Structures are given as structure tokens and as C-alpha cells.
Length: 131
Image 1 (tube, rainbow, N blue to C red):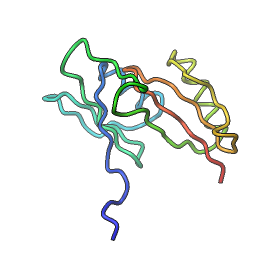
Image 2 (cartoon, rainbow, N blue to C red):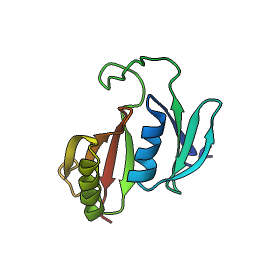
Image 3 (cartoon, rainbow, N blue to C red):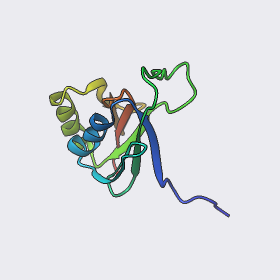
């Protein structure tokens, strides 16, 4: 018996709530589902995955180190094809989003991927897997 059926949502604590939401909404064309001003939080979706962006309560916040901390190493999102991956890379560069590495083969291919940092510093990977 399988107990789960995929991901309902992913919750990310961010330092720059509006800028992080804008990354998903304005760059990736996700939709805002709702806001919770009391927390505060912003919920966004691409109609497949929902992400809850939670404003960190303490400042300055402790920056995550992928090699030293337990937690989210990165968020990996599928993209339609290599052309879309390359176009997204161009948009990220135009929007001055910090790029960790540009589109390249994933473990020798044929899949390709790239990695960037959204405005609060969370690593986001984009992956194109040929059919």
C-alpha cells in the first residue's frame, strides 16, 4: 500500500518575501494562490506544484550552507525542453539573478540542468529531460 501521492506543497522560509514571490510570479510565470498577512506568507503555484513562502521571523537570518547544514539542499524544477531551459537562463541573466552554473549536461546527458539562487538565497535547479 502506498501512503503518499506526490507533493502537496513545499514550504520555504525566505528573508525577502516579496522579492522571492516576484521571482516565482514574474520570472517563472507562477500564479499567486493566496497570502497570509498574519504570518506573513505567500502561496504560489505553476498548477503542478505549490510553494509556500514564509517570511523569516528573526533578522539577521542564518544563511544556509549546503555543505554544513541539514535542510533543503536545493529545489529542482522540471522545464519543458532544452530550448526552454536556455531561454530561462537568458531571462535570469537579464533579471540579474545569481547563476551558480549555466545550462550544462547532467551527469553526461542527455538531460541538461542549471542552478541559480532566488532572491532570498535558496538554490533552485532547473532540469530538462528529453522524452
